[in-house]
Length: 538
Image (cartoon, rainbow, N blue to C red; front, side):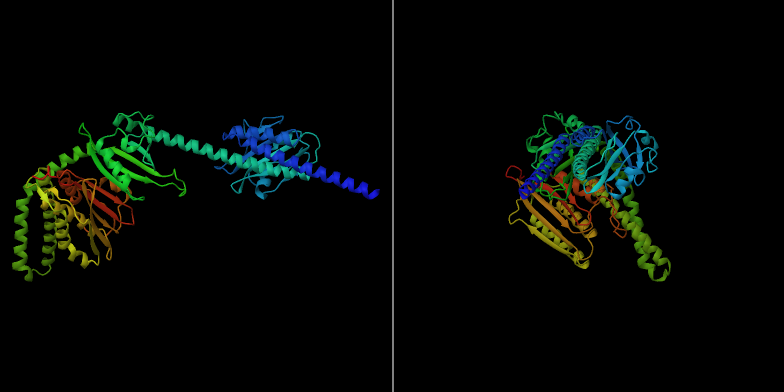
């Protein structure tokens, strides 16, 4: 009989313990469910305290969070206290006081009456008539982010099971608070980004990885007369944008490499000039199918074009006036060097320096006059041009220079490139300038490839290298006249007109230039020309 009573007693104890465990789990799940219903930090704090007091039957509770700027524990929410310590928040340095000790040591601290307790870092808190208190560290993302405090104004003994529940609840609340904090930070960042986009004078268009418009800032909406809200989600290639911009964007997005920036210019109907920079955006989560896309930033460069026109006209006029006296000076120095170089002694080096300076000035004058000739279509003869033949000629003419620098020069052309209408001499010059740049900015032993292929009725010619690459901040200005990029300290000197000449030549042929580059991994410079049709051939 005694054994039977003992067994019944054990079963009842086991059932009671199981019930207690179930109640504890239910309490933890209840708190988790309640605090996860909102991402508003203040709402989560208040909801968490209400849930805690419904599970642990004490008089008051509070939550203190570590302030990122100072590292202090700051009381953010309280319930059931006799005094307000939130309006003028109670601050406790980590490591000081009971709560600071709980954080520093990452352990639960249980204490009784606090009256006159010397461990208090905030003496006014001692005026609370507390007879029992438990301080439980709260964790988020693997670290202590704050303290959950529960208090009673009459003597109370916290059971081991209650401490276990408090630990679990504190961590549940900690996760919810960290999520709310991250959400608040995201909203703040979104607000700052929105303010920047809305106030930017540049036109900005964001495109998702499926080629749909994701965002249009006010400047872009005004420029293209768009309804910024209605156009979101519209496929880029169907959007009512400027035709040349839309065509270029669609072409770039369809064929652009994932890590390159593309720059081109368009001229609006009102004569304004805009520079467009297309930058890929990669998602940090490589497995996110919705991540990534492109951002298009358009800057009004009309004023730069106007200043450039005035400056170019002045310089070209000066170049004409300087050409004859420069030629006479050069001839005189050459004659002096040839006739008296052997007896000049130390003066021979001075003459050589003068000759080098005169030759560089002569190159600048020649480039300026070439630029003027192209812009004015002087000596520009239109006829069917075999681009493959032009490419072969340029490559053969420069191959020795590449070999002397230990660089490989390769050619990859479509089997049957259609002809283009234009001037083969000027197209030769354009490709020669591209190859000269690749030769200059690719180190010894580097690789340069000339490619040409047909794409949607156009011929695309590219010169790709694995050289130093172009700094991102310089890429939008590369085709400006006199603009030079300093990539290395020992790079060759130039006039800053080579790419501007290419741009003028290509535009005279009804085409466009482009470039892609990633610093440290090389660059690709190219141009696109309309393929000749029977109607276009003279």
